[in-house]
Amino acid sequence: MNILLLEDTYTLREQIAEYFSLLGHDVTKCADGDAFFELDDYRIFDLFLLDLNVPNFSGLEILEFLHNEKIETPKVVITASADIASMKNSFQHGCCEYVKKPFSLEELEVRINRFFTDNYNIFELSDKYLFDKEKNSLLCEDTEIKLTKIQKKIILYLLTNRGRTCSVNDIIEYITPDKLIDFSTLASHIKNIRQATTPNIIQTVRGEGYRIV
Image 1 (cartoon, helix red, strand yellow):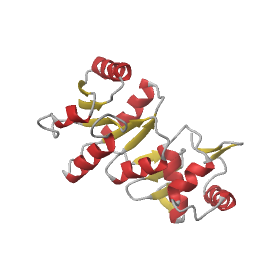
Image 2: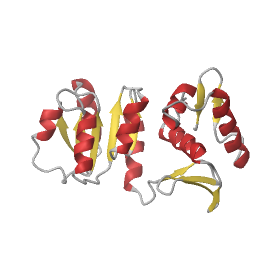
Image 3: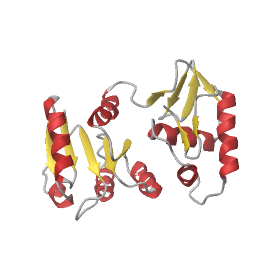
Image 4: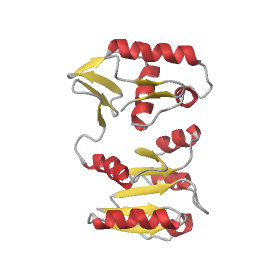
């Protein structure tokens, strides 16, 4: 696999490049946006790993460029930013996965590998339940579970941050940027999701938020 890595932190850039090189992949390294735009051909890459906060042209600007050029290659954002607006903009411009720093290289590998299977749009929640990202639907043994648009957005956001505890404020800001719902309304939506599926599909982390593991 031919990987384009955009990361301005030298140590992390070298660690990622070495890790994936040892797995047999070719890694082209860019330390900033200028280095990216000096490349001759972007269609030779099988994967883009993009840090958002790099000098000159940002990772988001590069995402927009790739989106406008209709380059459909999978794009993974790696960032320390917890800004929900940046996450939404990234997904709107073709980001397939959003990985928050710090992360382990093994976690990054797992998240990347799913793009190169036949069902990378399918998230397995349990033995019975699947979420189809492309169709935006929750399935139980091939039967769609009826959920509202907000409830589907809650599930997708938690799946995007799988294994991490998401705060109530972050979830609300993602699903309704104008904050049209409050804590109790969010809790009610999650209760309804559990009632339509199973009680442990979404875990509550007291004092912190919610997560899907």
